[in-house]
Length: 553
Image 1 (cartoon, rainbow, N blue to C red):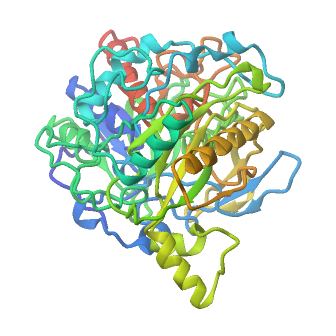
Image 2: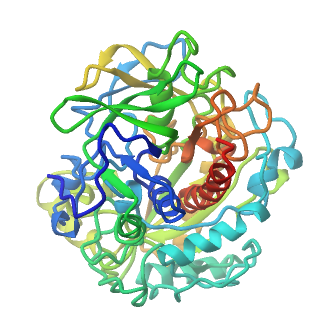
Image 3: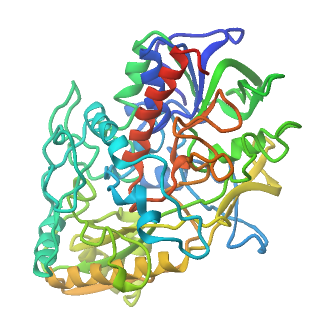
């Protein structure tokens, strides 16, 4: 059920300044910024408009029935490892599908990229089998927008606590969240090994901020909406401000199927299915696609025409290419005393000692390791126990009772290399509930990605042991068949032959069509992309607003 508060209503006959497709980490930013700058904006969001009253701690409803995310039953995906394989119908990715997008249900880790993330190709050189490349912008270009994101949304952390932190112009607006049992144990183990744990930066309020209440430590962050509004997604922050401008209309349940072009080859609006299934056109002077790293390339491919037979804005042939998931790994430990990790936020301590892996290892990569417990009762009963323990009967019940309250996890979050075959494309046979070609995901981890993941898994196991765990176990590193972070499918660059958008997020092929979300990424970063997506959106809003003010769009 969509709840739509009072807001500006545009007629379908109106030609607005901007149509924005998607209302998540980037679309919410762009809507607020452009409407405040005086432009008329319509945001088309495929999901519903939920409020804090709609959120629930029901694990089954959130995770299995897709309360906040894409529903495989209506939006099926297919998966294959290589273009030579036959794609099989299976869940292959997840993203936020509601007003507010992924940050409504995300864990709320809010890491900045480091300086190296933007210039790695120059430092490391070419890597076989990849499209490894520098970004056309630097960390210094994005730093003011990282700072703006932290202050506009409300982020808790401790500046300077890590010796590996990149430069910053201001401290975090809020102090770090209180440390959990896992954080204390993680610090103990990490320091024994010579590492440098620090308070995890999170987009969750540790104190009241701009009229919003702080975290109530309910324990339902990852995969759940925040009833308190303490999780700093666009839903309780930027979206109400966009509406208050009087120039922004957000239309939920609006499933965009095509970007329309005029006779000059310029974007003239978006065709979408409304909540009744009726096909509708919203006209606009410019279009911004901020639908995420999977839906954005899919929409461009669906928008093929005689002018763009291989997909809109795809003269480079790179729309949908270089998909990056980020890899991850899990090392777990059971301790003597109850930790009660099911309470409060996921992660309160992290290390970046392996953010950039030393060249002596012989492979590219890096990442961070944090301490957390991301299980809930149902998921822990299914996957949380060591595989060697009984999986049924009275001994299984005893193990659940003991391990659930005494377990913590060291989670590794690592790089993924851009590989051209890893992609989003249109399936030949499977359709979605609207009769459109389903998304086909092709993905096979580069060998360096798996080696990086194994390295961080080994370090995580050592930290758990050094922290004093009575039992340790891990889950083996395996090739990815499912993605949470959807990055790199419409990469940014200066050369139209090797990228899809320029440094202003303008497509090289269509001067009034812009793309801004995880698809813009050139490299994957170290496993936590949301702050960079948000910072890019603030920067893109500035650039687009300046171009529009000069009539350069």
